[in-house]
Image (cartoon, rainbow, N blue to C red):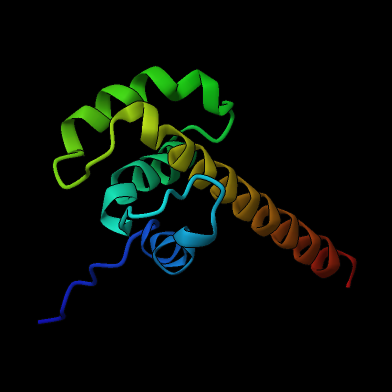
Length: 112
């Protein structure tokens, strides 16, 4: 029997934010990663689920989802929204860079 991995598409991005949230523009003194984690998770997953949209187009859905999962956070949606947007933006940047690298490698192999 093989052990099932608990790693999904959000694991590494969440790890990044766990290490770096205190340096982000959204950080407020006295807040913990656990306060931002639900919003960061939503920003990452929303970008993965909606790569063709801009952040403002998914805000109403994110706000509703945040209300369902924010139990460990001391932040309201209005306080956490900037963390979700930062996570969305970083996930979009990373996916764009990965896509460009893939396309470049594909073109290189086709030319060879």
